[in-house]
Image 1: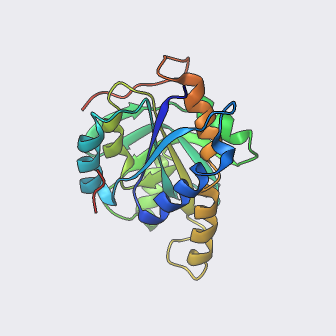
Image 2: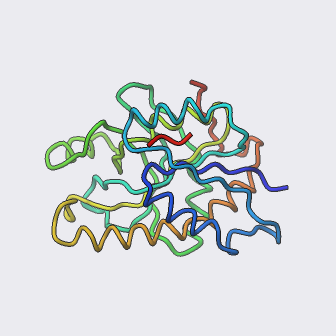
Image 3: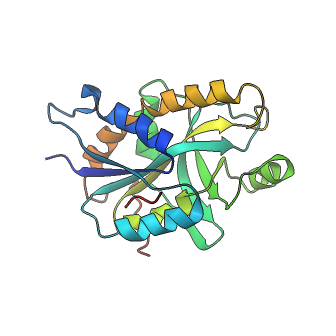
Length: 219
């Protein structure tokens, strides 16, 4: 039996896109339907912390946090995929993440995939602050991942973010709506690679499986 994959998506639009992708036949593995639950975990750090606490004792084998994020470096393009090697938050120590094999599975689908640190903040990031975070080596900023990884306990966890805005493609310019639609469409197509990764590792310690330290949907 395939392992249970829990996918946390902060926003309703993100959860809807992921459910459509995971609900298709493409996420079947070796003829068996994937065992996937997509959970809308809520926007921002406070709701994410509440969701993590509520989900920690749930019955799942692998955790993925997925959604949109802000690219920090000029090389990023809207629609690129970032698989976090580490997640950093202001209220917690940096945590290492499963990275190499999820990235390989996503690249096998032809996606542009970057790997590197993801940083979580309590607010939207613009201008000079975006550049300052990029100087730390981070690739993407979000508002949830550092809180949500606590739900994994001793289970494998990965963070996958689709880049929405970048230093060259700011969040509030005239093309934002078009980029958001395209990024959500990309989010719909990451299901099959993530199921392959989750199935391959199950609950065992694969060579790049990193288990986070221990620490219901929130409107």
